[in-house]
Length: 65
Image (cartoon, rainbow, N blue to C red; front, side, top):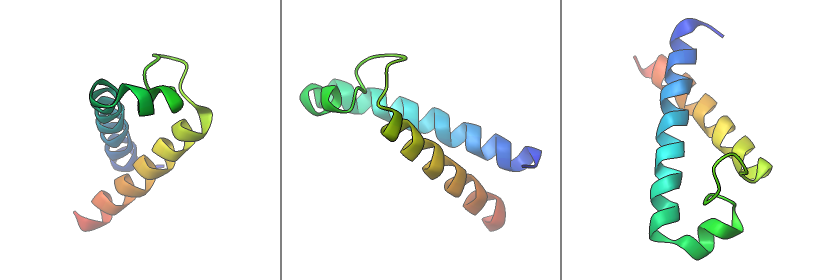
């Protein structure tokens, strides 16, 4: 993975983690079901989903550049 893709991936992951925290504050019951309310104890399937989405969005941003 080249540096630009990695930079975009990192930016997307930061955004998703921040959005997850915001979602957890707004919807605590749903966030608890996904373990979004516990730092470091996230649902591994949700974590993989975030990583896959961040990778795809990073590649898309790189190609759209």
